[in-house]
Length: 189
Image 1 (cartoon, one colour):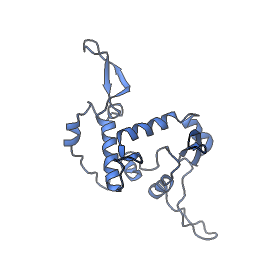
Image 2 (cartoon, one colour):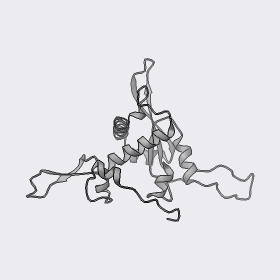
Image 3 (cartoon, helix red, strand yellow):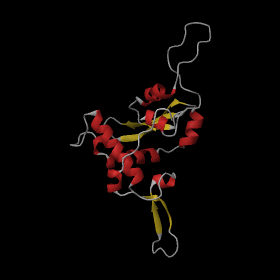
Image 4 (cartoon, rainbow, N blue to C red):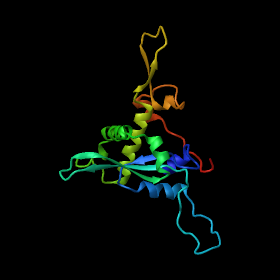
């Protein structure tokens, strides 16, 4: 995922990231973006990759009681200063939780104990790519709509995230999504 982000808009540093407490994201960020620091001439030469100071990565860890009921969310700052991360995140994790819910509803393979649960990483990736593409290119979002122009007969003009980002000029159909072949990017760009 971070290799894709690096190719498509974040070549020098990872975007501010938040995840649950399962782990693996920190190592992925380090693997893609960091380098081993230069040897300063004293002591043993460094061998481990280090995060940059301006990186921001937070884990929102759900806490449960003995019966498994949700009691709250604990914020753990992995990369970055706690003050800067909390200013960016705020005191609420509602947007993160909403994003997780939307992702789970669109992609049944993310839910455990279901018939759609994905055991093969290849199938999970394919489902995640489909979910991301549909969410950003096909599904209009109520929060992104704008007032329609007069005379159009509509009150609102629906929009998708790709239109807001300036990448698309219209809402795609599912047929358009399935029949459009993206061109591979060269490794030189």
